[in-house]
Image 1 (cartoon, rainbow, N blue to C red):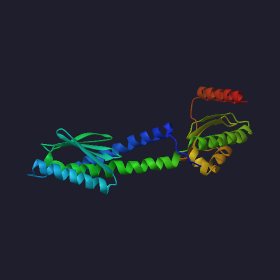
Image 2: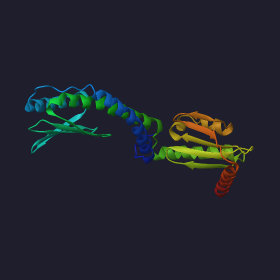
Image 3: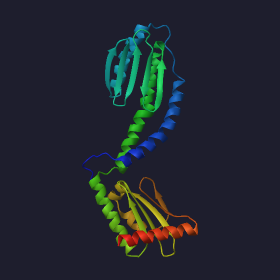
Image 4: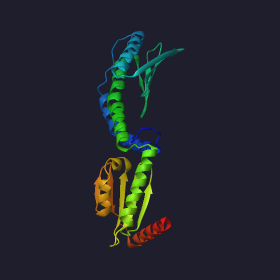
Length: 251
């Protein structure tokens, strides 16, 4: 159902939020790791530079990264792709800096080259690898291309019409590419707000059908949520009036 991969701003927003929450914990773990870093005593700068460049290539290979390197004037530059991680090394002093996403540039002296290598590996293990896995998991849970999303949206709209419309319940449907939000009023004036993600619905429509027929408070993470709207009487009246206007406009 998802043959063509397309850009999706809505998915990017979900990933951005997850990234922010994830990095708060990852950053703390990385700070704890840094306390164990030890300098390498009495090593000449040129030897440290050679060792650092050699070990960076090995580190890239072990982590299945592409390592690119070039020199310019008084510096060596190394990139670990695709993350990206950039290392700038001073040719004479051996001092170097590491730049990577989510964190300020780190600076090391030549005697700390092993600490720098350990920092990169810890950064990959604590930040990049888990975050890459989380990002992929989000795509698998929520992503639909435009064509597949349109099919799902039409199906949900038809269900609302056939179930809620048949009962003459006032409702309002708002849809984006990845999810639908349904607000509806029952005969006893209770107003429910239901949100469902399209990808899970495309795999199993039964939960939405059940909730439209038998509304109740439910929350299934990354799938569907349904809850009573708790507002003052005037706000409920305004919502009901809005539902009525939306439904009349759709007729």
